[in-house]
Image 1: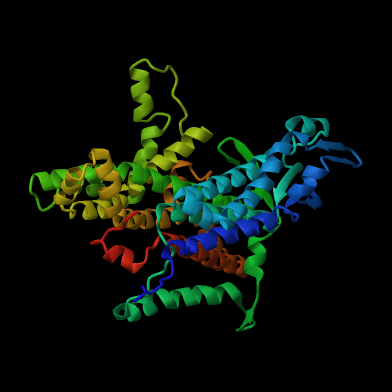
Image 2: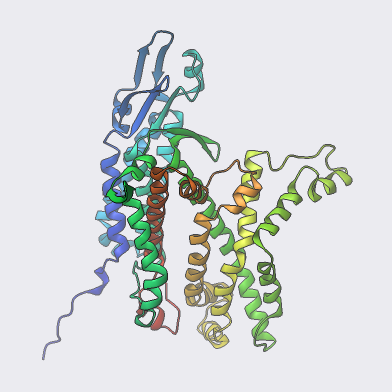
Length: 479
């Protein structure tokens, strides 16, 4: 009797593969469509694609008082890489099943993540280097009157590449995009406290009250997509971005670094506390209580304490001056780089318990016999951790990332207090829109809230694992 033929499950492609492929396809198209706006004397003078700037590398314009001559050749290498990166990513995605069969499941997503990061970086660097300071000086203009900025398609290209990076990383570490089905007993709670408020936000985003009745309008989107660019500095690069898109990138930068910092600090700490708890046969760790204790203090008070610590006459400056290390106080909060680092440190300090608790709760329940079995099978300490302990603790890690990243994206109190109002985040923007007397700006606040909700849902979909991945191995997952 012949054996029944079964389909080969090794060629099963996760949802993140299709997301990555689609994002690279869209990015490949967007680099060939006009996405960069050239502004001369505060007026738009044409929209260009990356390919057009590469093939037509000179620009000249004569106005009443200025002669503008631009040469885009110095940025040619970045323009080439901006075009090549998404195309190469799309090719690798197309041959991903074959590459996975030959190289394993991890390397192809790693290559696509690197290409997406390269494409994003080259697009940003190319935009900031298309016009040099020398050319602005010769034209007798500043960076505000002569610059390249992105239109809506350019902003969309950045978002597409960010999603490609996220989905490639998720595929690389073996998590499949999935939104869990809502539990039936909580339907009433969800309807009252989640669905109805969201429905109200959705209604206020598209309908405005005029003469006693509500009418459909897109004024909120028009406010958010207004053609007003601002100069934003990210890691030494000055980019001319659409005003609200630059605010979103700033908030995303804070959220990502907060999540990474909390994970790098929280996981080793949770691991040490869990080992100590099991070694001493305790039900819980008192040390964990001391790490959670600061959460009982008001966040605003803690933030003002940090600002006082780094202020001109604060504790840090007083200590450095008393020890003779410095003679004059350092303006930590006025320096762009130092202030940005301080904001991220304070955010990490504030959100650390939200990463520590879920990771600790998983690690403390792991049986020590699991690690011992790995050693009996020939694994050393490092191999036992990366192949056994860490994969089994992934549910706690994913929960910690969700509990840190989502609130940090919209949290504005710490950046606002530390920077003394000089840094605008997405939370500030939503608040200012909602409190504005203009109905158009109030609509824009609701529209922005909906866009943030969509971004959060995409992020949760990438982080959430399928139910069987959490249940088949005793609460963990195998990488």
